[in-house]
Length: 73
Image (cartoon, rainbow, N blue to C red; front, side):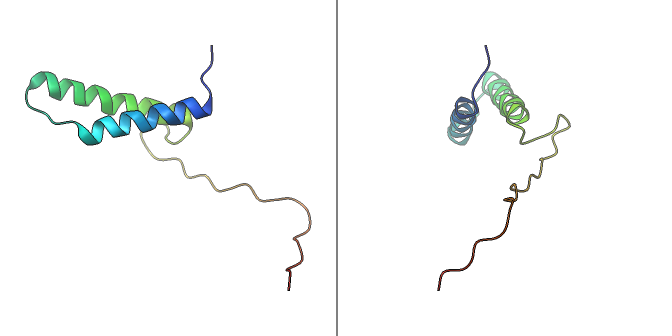
């Protein structure tokens, strides 16, 4: 079973939301925070946003092919 890009983006959003609301009170919370950060990193790798070493991937939008459209006046 594969995961769609839309589902992957939704999961990334959910983890980011949980991270933004998370408060650490004890060791268990600290472990959970580390787990969530690791999860986010893995999801970003799957989405093609980061390489395995954690560096962000810079992608440029695809250029359209063919002649440019004439500007409407």
